[in-house]
Image 1 (cartoon, rainbow, N blue to C red):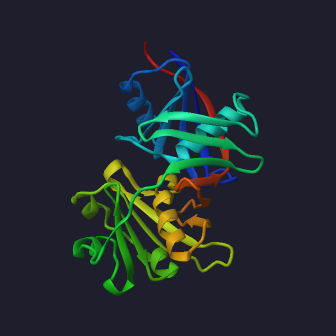
Image 2: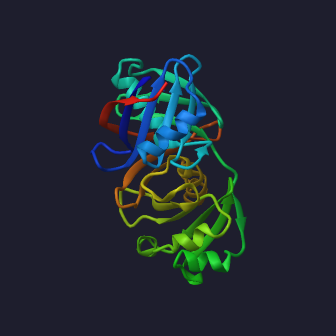
Length: 268
């Protein structure tokens, strides 16, 4: 069996920037075993699988399936637009483990509408987690839990950029993902962040759309703003425009660029 396969850099307009995603679009479903094998072969943070007949969309890291992936969804919409299966001004709805997800193809951006998580703030951050992230107590502004993940606001962008997590130590504890964030020092940005997920095989994710839903909730409440501009300060880096919708969902806006187009040969 031959499958069309793509690699797309999402939340950027430059190749080798943003977050790379694999994209595999088929008319009929393929087996979960095949999806897992393809995701391992692609060896990027997530590979997205879309079945046209049902519009079912799934995402796999090289190790596990995830319930929500922003850059993978953006990459799928980008490929559908390139192939002429979507046009500017159209909206497409995907069936996912996180429920129906809408994507709108705008003139300047692809807009994704995702559910907002509930943030549960805690008074104290776990001592060992602070050490594993190379943080100090006086550098932490607040800590919240969401969807088995942790969000930590730190005192400055300088602190954020200096983080050197101990990924082996993090993997030895229970966890799913950690997003660390701070106000931006740039006049044209509201906040910056980094995202760590060694539990799913991604030590530091380049640009994490799903984590920006939690970041959007946190910063929109703190800054009293419905529209935000963000930068994920990974080695590759990427920009995300954010909006809180009237339905209390997050709208993520971004661009993407195709890096690789090819054919994947799967044994029958």
